[in-house]
Image 1 (spheres, rainbow, N blue to C red):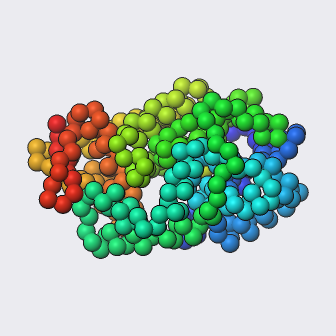
Image 2: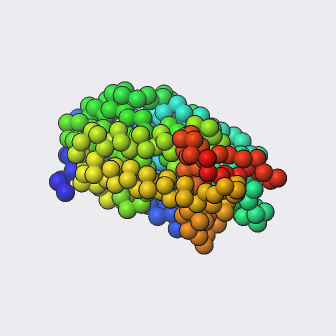
Length: 320
């Protein structure tokens, strides 16, 4: 692994409970300072970020620009605070809309737990998932980005040029940032080492085949060639093209695995997810597995290899 560019610092910020850590990147350009992602609205995360900035001799009020790769709280949780310090905070327009929807509509939480109220899940499971959403809101400041980012846009962050690549899937407006002079790419949660990224099935992506978009986004990153990847979590990835190709093959195999769980009679996604992805002991992990399975099922419906069927409670799926 080669050395970091002179203008880049990597900060690892804590996340509460068992959520691990998130990477934030300080860009010390020749003309100014910027951040890529922010960490959560959490006392320990804030303390760590401010302490690391101080070690770098950086006053928070000197940060001019912040780019959020996506709208999840570990990546844009203190956007409002950074705006208060004087920074301009940027994000894609679709993710700004998703952030506003999640923060402004808590009454939809029970629908979120049942995936838009369309799927039959056990009441206890629904109750426990619903109760988790307020916790996630507490880790996220409400704010409006100063500007939106679009695909192939060039952003000058303190004299360092970053090329925006729209990579939907994990969220519908997720972005990566390419720095071509150094052959590196900031991948947020689109590509991370070790685990396959979760594909979101929030209410705003229903009917849009997010899994298909995700795979195409992975192929797009794969095709840029060998670059060092700096993800939202974990260590740098020496060859992002190789890692992207691994994930493309992983998801294609999973698509076929989910397809094999389908029969002639419709079944609920809650049951199919356990067959396709295995059991999960923790409730939120079980909910994520169902969300992922729904992304695969929606993709199979798009490919006309599965059919969505209205059942007595919610919808089910059978093979085409």
